[in-house]
Image (cartoon, rainbow, N blue to C red; front, side, top):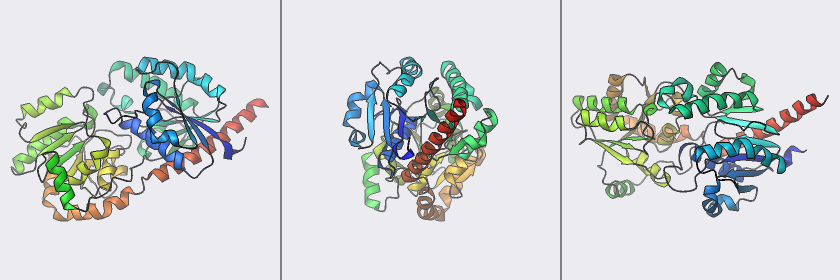
Length: 399
């Protein structure tokens, strides 16, 4: 086998091709990866196994026209998690043999057992280990067992940040030499908006004030929204004229407490829940905001931080896990449990007129390192290395 003819298969079961809340997180990550690989300057060809429920939408996707990428819908029903997991563990290894795959890549934590070729697994985070109480029991157990098994079985493991790599080495004892760090990509349309009239029109269309503070992400406990709401209430005590806070994003698990805390603090007039924001509109939401605040307790990478900086928007985020990697020296870092510290950081950001100029100038330059081209090229290298290691191991077993 020549590396130039590598056949790489990718599990894309979690990709949603629709403009809904399902097209976020790992779905968006995997779609971006497929898009980048289909344009990468490498003579590899790819098979992506997509969810049968998404077959019609996949056929209409621009990915379906890519010369070196084939989208293959699963023949079994895989719309629900139990069905999908059963297909991945039972039918997928057989499909890899039938299609003579050289390298198999699972981009979301879990490999099927019995992969018949070299394998790569991407691990996004170990939140289910560090914050198990934020997960429903069945999901927590599935991730804990299968992610640990997958990192032991994989030829190579990809971590989405140096922070996640440290977690894998420390908690799952994965040898450092088997872990590669590949940062997620910030799409090219996340950039500053230079025309004030465009931002004014956007705010008017969405009934937004001229100045607002923004959180954008899934509404779930790990994002520390209770701390954000509390810090915002303290900000208003320090500065009664502070702009309103807009919390945008789809509802995740255990989100009810956030709405309750807003009511308890009497902040209904000053905190707005915007709901799900389509991928297409997200750059404008960032660019039009006074600043972006993302005080999460733990992130595998913290892509919204890098996206906000790419748009030139001043950003406040947490000083833990991967957020310093996503924000660099441009973002303001605060301990996520320090509510007073977060309130004062927001107050300082509002008063610091030079912060916006610096973020507008340096944020896009910093975020440029998280390009789709860089991510795709790094994965191509990993596939080549995994194929080489796979051949070496097969040779040793054959002697």
